[in-house]
Length: 504
Image (cartoon, rainbow, N blue to C red; front, side):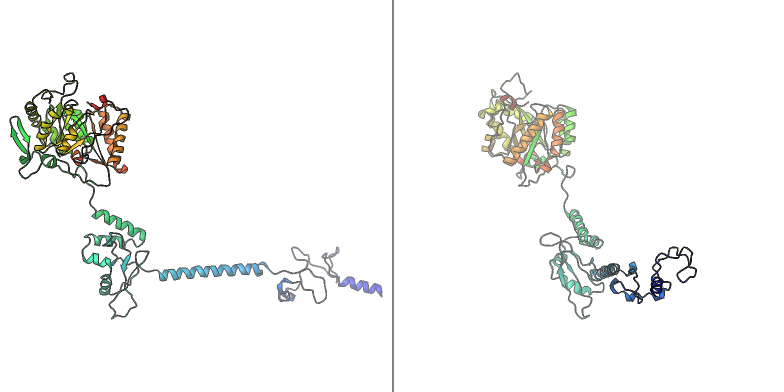
C-alpha cells in the first residue's frame, strides 16, 4: 500500500525537467520538444487568469501545486502607466496655454500710435484703442498705457471714437498742434514694427531725421571779404575801420561759433603762414576750420591765401613784427615796431602792416618780447587797434609782457597765449604741450596755444583735434575766447625758461 502511495505521489509532482530521456511524458505518450517555451507555461493559455493576481501577488493553483510567480507585462506596469499619464497631461497643458495666449494677445494699433510725447519729447506709451464689443451708439474709446507701448484695436472700431479718446491724451494734443511734420512717416515705420524694441528704433530714426545735423566746415560760411563798410583808405592803402552801423572787423570776419557753457574750449593759432607755399596749403587743407591761421605781412599772394583760408572756414590773424630783446641779431623784418622810435613813426609802420590784406579778425605779435614789455611803446599801438575794431592776441613771448593786461584795461577784445606748442618740434614734445592745454582748459574753462607750420606740428594738431569730442573739449576759433581770459597771466610750468617763452 505504501508503495502505491509513493507511486501516486510521484505521478502528481510536476515534471520540471521536461520530457524523459525516452521522449515520453509522464502519461507514457510522446512529448513535444520545448524549444524556447516557458517550462512553467500551461498548455492552455485560456486557463491563466491575470485577474487572479491582484497587485502582482503570487497565487497557487487549485490543485495546491507549488508554481513559480507570474508577473504582468511591462506595458501594464504601474510606473509605465503613470509616466504616460503625466506626459499626456503635460502636452495638454502646453497646448491649452498656447491657445489661450494666442487668443488673448492684442493686435497692435499702427494707425493710432503716436510715438512722441509732446511735453517731454520722449517716446509715448499711450495709444488709442476702441472696444469692438461696445454698443454701436457708444462713440467713446478707452485710452490707456501699457509697458509694451501698444494695444490691440478692432479694425472695425469707430474712427470718430478713436479721435475722441485721443483728444484726452497728450499724444492727441501733439497731433492736433502739428508737433512734427514727419509724424506720418513715423507711424508707418511703427506699423511695420509692433514690438517695443522696433518702436524705439523707429522713434530714434525719426528724431535723427528731424534733429539738425552738426555743422561741418562745408556748412559754415564766413562773411564775404572785404566788406566795404569795414574798409577805409590810408596813405598806404585800405585800413580796417568800424562800420557806420557799429559793426567791427573782429566780429564780422569771425567764424560762427556756438559755445556750450559746460564744455571747456581751446583756441589754436598756427602762425607764420604765407612764406612757404607747401606749408600754407597743407595747413589750410588738413587742419579743421576751427584752427585759426596767422599770416606774415611779407608773404606773397596774401590776398589769394586769405581767400582760400577763409573759404575753408579758418579765421585769419595778421602778425605784427615787434622788437625782441636781441634786436637786430633777431630781426623780425621791415616795418618792425621798435621801442626806440617815436609813437607816430610806429603808427605809420602799423598802417603799412594793416594795409597788407583785409578779412582778418585781429593781430598778434611776432617776436616782440621787448616791445610788449614796454607800456609806453605799446599803448598807442593797442589804442589804434581798438578804434579800428580789431582783436589782439598776446603771444606772450616774454613773462614780462603787459600787452594782455593793458588790453583788458582798455576793454578791447583780447586773448592770451598759454603755451607754445613746438619750441621743440617733436611728436612727444608737441603732444605734451597739447595735453597741458587740455588741463588748463579743464581748470580755467578755456586755453590758447600757438604753433608754427612745421610738418610735425600740422600732423599732431590734426590728430589731436579729432580726439577732443570724446574728451568733452571743444576746439574753438580765436574770436570765441575774446574777453574770456580777463587780465589773467598764463600759469608757468616747472621747467619753463625765458628762452622757451620767447617762441620763434
